[in-house]
Amino acid sequence: MSWWKPRRVEDVILYPGSQEVEEYVYTPGLHGLELAKALKEGKILGMKCGDKIIVPPLTFCPDHVEGELVEITGKWRVTLYTVIYEDLEGNRLPEPEILALIRPDGATGGLIHRVKAEPDKIYPGMPVEPVFKPAEERTGSITDILYFTPKE
Image (cartoon, rainbow, N blue to C red; front, side, top):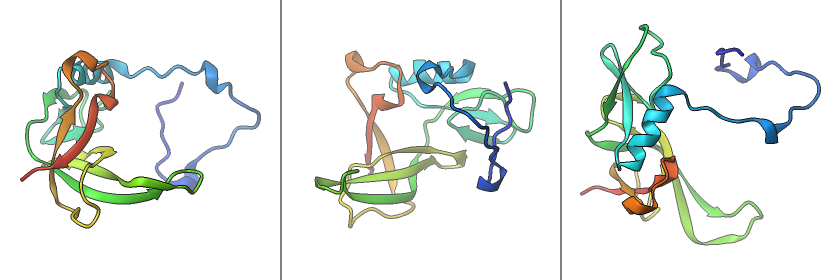
């Protein structure tokens, strides 16, 4: 197994044949497992790596041997977003969906998630906060966060 991940499309290596996707099992690693536990508790974790924080936490710190898991308690902000008006078949949605890259202040990376806001009111830099499912419905998945909502 290789840990190498291409950063550019031209670096992708194609292998002939097919892969049985149904047989593939994703393992989140130790930090991913801790993130899942935290989500179940209504918390979001990042990894402190030297003087920076990486969200979501990586298995290994790219600059140091290992990083330290930390709870993200600061402000979250919309970095980039898109408004979706149609489903995959081209049918108009009852109400637009907003997907955004949401990053905590002072961190690198971020989460791609839904934002529940008026499409004409959202903007880059907008402060938002996560809204979690009720505790009894959480399963330890990123979907435990229902959406992010504007923070006044």
